[in-house]
Image (cartoon, rainbow, N blue to C red; front, side, top):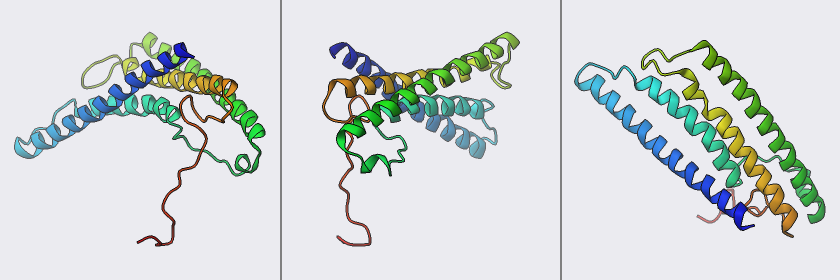
Length: 182
């Protein structure tokens, strides 16, 4: 368990830094571009390209982060009606299926990137190899697949139902709807 927790923590630190610095850099580049365009009548020629790179990075690394925090979309109408033992089996099955799909998609994404490398495709403004931008797609799929695999392990070891390695299956008790409580 300690080794799995260490792996989970390494991914968490990586994701946190990538997501926070990625958003800050994107904001900085965008602000600098707006400033340059409005003050100097000259846009940064690379701003759009850098922001596209960062959007890909944030989206695909964010996929792993969302699965770690159990913030992925869940359609649970049938699941919610089941008993705890059946929920456990369903969660393990869903996590296994999702992990398998994530690893399969990572394989296909790597094949696509291999084609980009073979063709030597580069970005128009910075002339950076295009595969560097898209390498984050399979990385995100692998991180997400690992997260779902960790959820399987946690569900096999613990009595409670876990939607991720660290998150127990529970709904937040929010404020009542319909304007009450105001």
